Image (cartoon, rainbow, N blue to C red; front, side, top):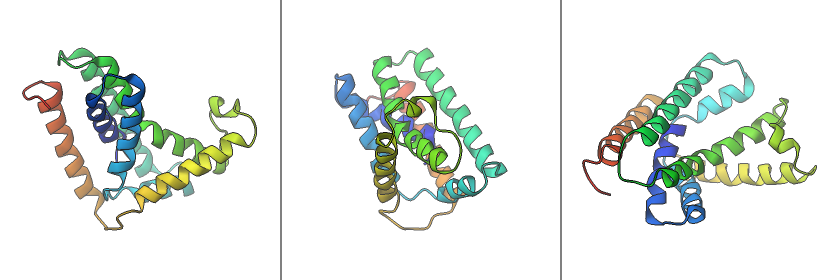
Length: 174
């Protein structure tokens, strides 16, 4: 699932509460729930793990981050009637599990872990990241239905268009 889709679903998940902490937890939980939906991009992760200079994986990641930035800019700049702080918390919670997987992959893939992870006492970060990786992969492997990456991108794009149209532009209430 793209980071942009995770962020949008995380934003939706925060709308059932006024608490930032509960909203963050809902957004994180939403990540795992939608990761159980087959989304055809698993091969990109493995391509990157085995070749960190893989052009396809890097291009898809760059486009995804660009779209995520556009989405966040829209959330901040378009008047929509929702609490912008809660939407931002939702976006962070929605993408946080994938960021933790990236820390795990970089740590065990030979690259230097992020500075924040390096400050955690030795052994704790490895255990937490390894446990999270196991949980994350459990949800990824819940439904083993093959789907083409192009098809998955089309349904995620359709979701994003509906999200922006109905949620951010305020033509409907959720």
